[in-house]
Image (tube, rainbow, N blue to C red; front, side, top):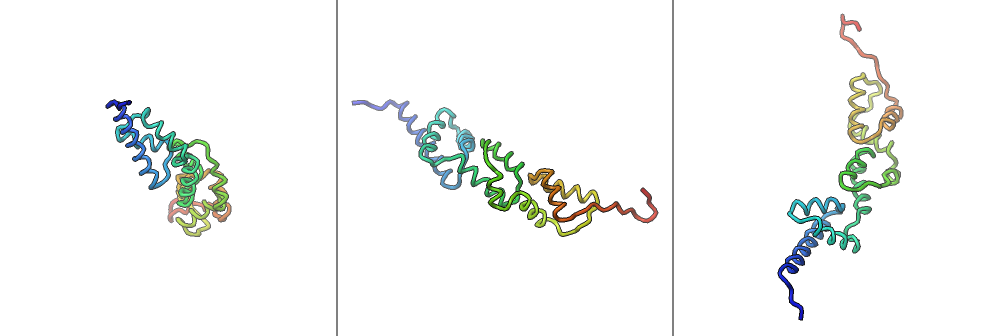
Length: 172
């Protein structure tokens, strides 16, 4: 009859703890593999004891980076973020290859999303001074939209730069 050694029992117990933590985290929302590794590292677990557990959860389809990426992209598009920012955020979470354009097309495309974000923030002024034009461009850029998409937004809304108005007595 084989008896358990204390070291194998503690290893099994630690493995079970890792699995319980992972399942609790995954029950709340999807997590990427890197997120799980980082959260478990913060709790004092070593990567070599965590990796086999996450591999098993991946095989059982409890953890799936592709599914995580789809949920994450859908959520960020819904909040009005563009492809550059979403791709950066996914990269920070350990996801590198995702087809953002396909999901954006389901929502109407990046241009329509940028138009919605712009309309939600600003009115329908058709003539802007240069500093306001730059401010609005920066807003869309910080949201993760490309320069080309921003140009298309201004063209679509027929927004033009107005000449700078100087107070009386001041000349340019």
